[in-house]
Length: 236
Image 1: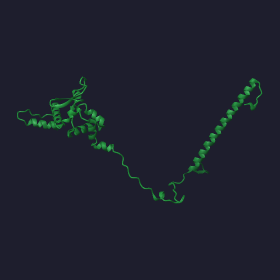
Image 2: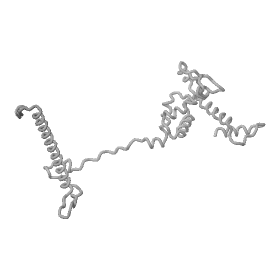
Image 3: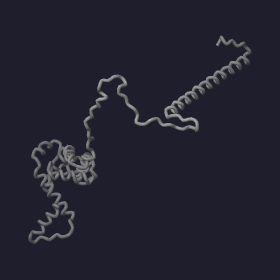
Image 4: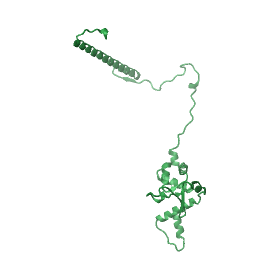
């Protein structure tokens, strides 16, 4: 929009070439520089004083920038010399635009995209405060609604005699037909199954103990035959 406004201002000038085609890259860059100058016109004077020991400021075509320690790298110039963006309503719109273009990314991802070209004083805090205004993010990350606990019914808090108030299941027992002559309930079937499994486990344990005893007796008999000695059970 700013680029079209600047084009209109250029076209109404006398003896200036009229621009009618689509926006060129030069017009877009000029519009961006104009918006940055508007934002920096509200730059507090104490920012330079506050960061003068840690940040190296310089001006280029009327735009305040900083110089980082990666100036010898092969990165783009916008990255090695980012533009200073103070707190301004246009900064809020820029952050929200970047946030939406990154599919509503978080604070760190949005800030990482911005610092490739701009330097925002207290950037993380500023971006976090702006992203709190995103309606979609607030809708998805909103906390759960906690309702007040309901009071207990009178039958659970009144002092009464034992078994004066009882409860019952909503469903009766389920009858299972095993064969033509036997019909047992679900509880009886479970009890029978538990008893059968325990009986089988006891039987297998008894058989294992008996087999172990027989094996031990055979070893003793074999030892007796080999050594030809009398076997005294009391000695073992």
